[in-house]
Image (cartoon, rainbow, N blue to C red):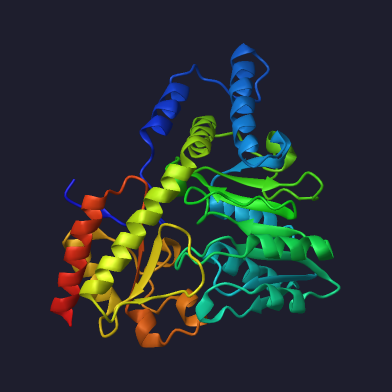
Length: 370
């Protein structure tokens, strides 16, 4: 391949082992897990087996795993059950969280958007200070999709436990990059398969069985009556395989991502001393949000695209906007710096040779644009 893909927070290449697992499922006779005949029963068993694999990853019960069409649906499934009272969140969460909460506010939900500042994540003292008698949920991203800055999950889990408030975690930008700290206070977690080398069009919502969750889609009795519709069995089986791979290889993957990102940032800063890293807090292993002062980010992105370096200006779901990133501006980053920033996100299939080539191309392109 002549291109270098550094946009793994937008989507990832499917792992060949996941692909083969899906192909095997697609070769099965036509079957619906809800059918009562033998083919349907066999499909049901394959669905149950996949659910057991996924639930074991989260040390959960199979009935606490709801399969969805992806991260956005998982997030909406949980949030749209919060139609009253008060929640605590931030203005830097993914658009599927941020815009859904804004929609619910118009229907009477009260939301406190915590400041994050240059750190890039809410602080535990601000969360505790914002709690009200009618606070019904804490809603946060485990890792910010644009900057990679991580949430203090353990500390915030302790707060949720102390006040007995449900804690919802959007883990879409975390899962696959580092081991996930499964705090006992976490009530629900949203995950998308295509963010960690699984299939597109499938995700899960882990939600504790003790939490009363109304369905977003009504109809049949699938997914424990929480999500109607015939299950996408090939995708679910593929997702279970992706989780299996993570269980076996997460330590190696995390080290690989961390090593490549350090190499990328360290050597790029040598060539471009003015380079700035956005987000002062600890970051997930694969993500670099870099500001190139004096350079127009859109122009740089286009030039890199022409040279076969694929990065992004922020979250893929917010692309197409000429405005600087909502995440960066809410962190207090000046307009010009935000407009000069690009996100580079490394995946497990990237190599050191690719990163070295990317460093040379990025540095030379920035120098030409200066």
